[in-house]
Amino acid sequence: MATEPTKDDGRKVSEQLLDIRERWHCARHPFYDRLEEGTLDLKHLGTFLVHHSLLVKQIFRSIGVTYAKSPDDIAYFIVENLAEEAGMLGIDGGEAHDHRDLISAFTRYCGISDDELANTELLPTWYARAAYYWWITDADAPIVRIAVQSTQESQLVSENERVVPALCNKYGFTKDSPEIGFFVEHATADIKHGNILLDLVDKHATTPELRARCLKLAEQTCKLRWVSFNELYRVTHLGEAVGQAPA
Image (cartoon, rainbow, N blue to C red):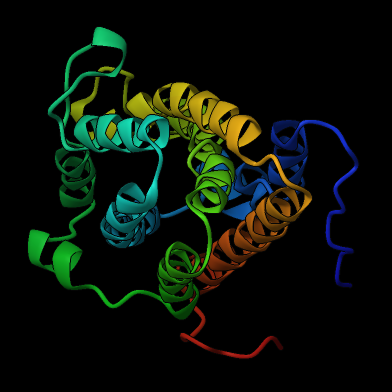
């Protein structure tokens, strides 16, 4: 059954965005249930990272357009975020890591070659997510793009709070295992980013039209993220063909 779209109830936009995120949070997806049980093939988690990496590549290119359209505080955040992701700047003064290297450390462990990582065709729903980011960037004010990102990036925190213990308890890793560095770092790294994004939304989404647009597109993006996990789960863990209709 389709859910009713969120209506602006007058609270801070950030509070309403958090409610939307929690309603569609992928940390509750069966994909992670199977991982905690130890029944998920690790290569399927590696496939998630492949798709995540290819999606983020598109997100970062599109956010360059947002940078060009943004006021200084949003533009500064974008630069800092990209520098941290690229390993040019450590988070909160910590050691800098290129997140592409963190991803490839795990995908190689899973038997996924660097060539496969770079050239995998995105599943249709993941491709749709990439296209949706480009569309929002082109069609909407920068703060709408920031609102959308605030509900997406921060989901990795709760997801990886499940992933790291599962990898340690069921798959023989420790928190210091270099292969799982991506998951360990993202169990905490995106808390800071998420809070900054939410503060920016409250500052810049000041008209009823902008507030409503932020809520609408953030919710649509959260739904699309959940659907993309459904497809990943069905194709990897359940072994269905891409695009196969439900039984």
